[in-house]
Length: 108
Figure (tube, rainbow, N blue to C red):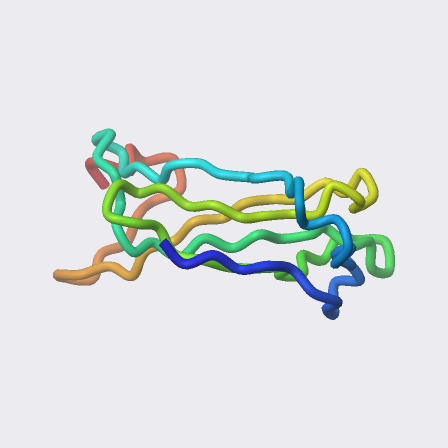
């Protein structure tokens, strides 16, 4: 599994480089709608930033899942109480299809 450490970035989130002895580990597992682990899914860690009355999401870090669908980010415990969002995606294979808004994702 590939791991990334946070540095200063466009999202304005700074990692305290002196406090990496006890990082906060944010991890999870990506599964498809049948409950199967998704290998090599792209997982983005996003920070919501208020922008002119709306919210913009800026990518803070990204990684990919391992063969068990597991991902992990390491964060400095000194980050302010920042709310972060995790979004996972996987490039599709096979025929292109359209999924309707209220459809069952496993049976579009």
